[in-house]
Image: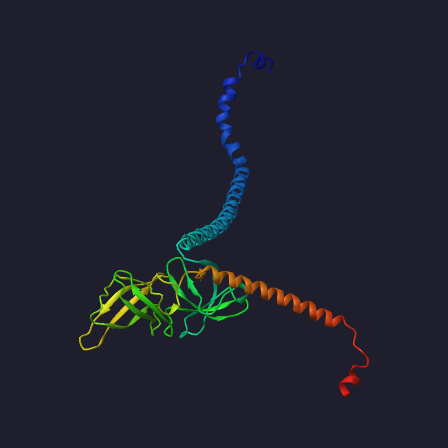
Length: 291
């Protein structure tokens, strides 16, 4: 041991013995290595499952946010279109929102969130950013029902923007969102692709508002009138933001005065009712009633 420590005589012997003892060390360490391997396998699998679950939840949240973002983007685009449309309208407008539609399949009406308290009146025109939608046919205190131009009971006086030919556009009697031009003679100059605007006849709608586009003209020689179909320009089935039109300043001012008058009347009635409830009842009142 002294010689080995001083001169290293047994270094080669120990090196050779290392080859012989290596299998013994490997066998002795096998349980530990197997235990670490099993632990790594199960821990890694658990971590992967947890990470997959977390990533799946994050993906679901991200998809929801993306859908919301797309919805907000579309809504913002519609509002911008509506704002641009108000610039060319003659008169004041009142922005409104469609909140419901009629459950009756034979009645094409929608409910908006503006009513008598906002100055809405019967017959008032309703438009979206692309064209005429209908007119108010029922006014409630805070909401109103609007009859759409595609309803079969609604007739819109129109004219062809190209040449001024006049006609009456009635809602289709089928469930399709179309218009049918009535009493169009065979000689009238109306072609597919022509744009229809409100003619202002009957003072129902303001003049020159976009209404529809002709999609087909069928002239049967055996019939007195041609069959003309048109597609509304307003996005009746998808739009939600609309505007009510006051044709002139006097109508808008009158509507605001009506709102102020109604508010004052309600406040006065409330004060009077409170005063009557606080007033003591006279004990001789029953005798006076008997007399």
